[in-house]
Image (cartoon, rainbow, N blue to C red; front, side):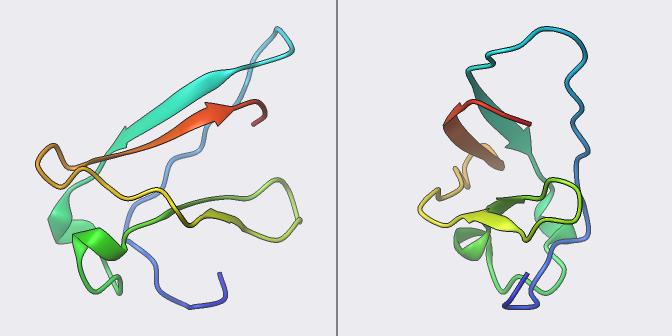
Length: 77
């Protein structure tokens, strides 16, 4: 990613079967694994497909009370 800030955790999600996906993705995180991200409110999710550039979901803020971050309305993996 261009900013160089990243957490010490990641998820690898693979679609198996089906097509025309539409889903909301909610991921839990542990604050101790924020890595170089300065604080929870600066946490953002990003998606990368193969060798394509990172696609950052910049307007999605985490729910710090639940230690979760949700990206609604996704249609691809």
